[in-house]
Image 1 (tube, helix red, strand yellow):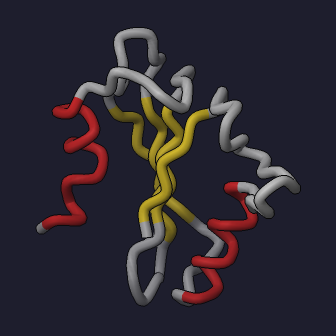
Image 2 (cartoon, rainbow, N blue to C red):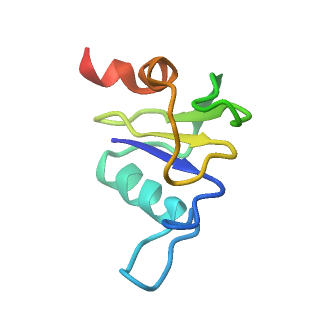
Length: 97
């Protein structure tokens, strides 16, 4: 499971919302950590920015999981943006290998 989310996404807030019963990113990651037996430790990697105005991406990879659990926070990116496809592929391309 690889979750990508922006800190300024107003359409689907990182903290979740009641309307539509959207859980927070923290709750979502905790669910997948539990489901995949992950420890609470993770490795953090700084990655490329995915838009011209982004400040970069921080990816966390949880350890000891039966299946991968990762979260990439793309900084300063609205919900709908003109994404750099090469940067996105760098962040989640490992899923296709």
